[in-house]
Image (cartoon, rainbow, N blue to C red):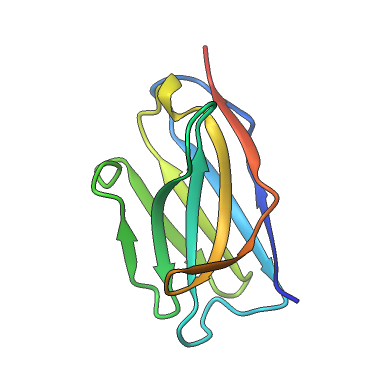
Length: 118
């Protein structure tokens, strides 16, 4: 059974860089045709796809976030990391790491609250 667990600071100051790590167990980041994504949900709003890193290490980003977002991975630790630079209060959200197979997002972490505030 695949399990994903987000970790990182719950409070980030405006203009700083948000960094979250997802630790994966029960599955490998390099398994063919599996994709590993970050999705967030701001308070009172819907889910927003932020970006994906695939089994080969290729990355894909939401156009609205591409200039501030990067996703990387450490295959030796089976972890992938999200970084969002120059954060503002609008980046306050619950952040989820997810495994998807194409458009099927079938394994989710429990989510972690990140608040951007001074």
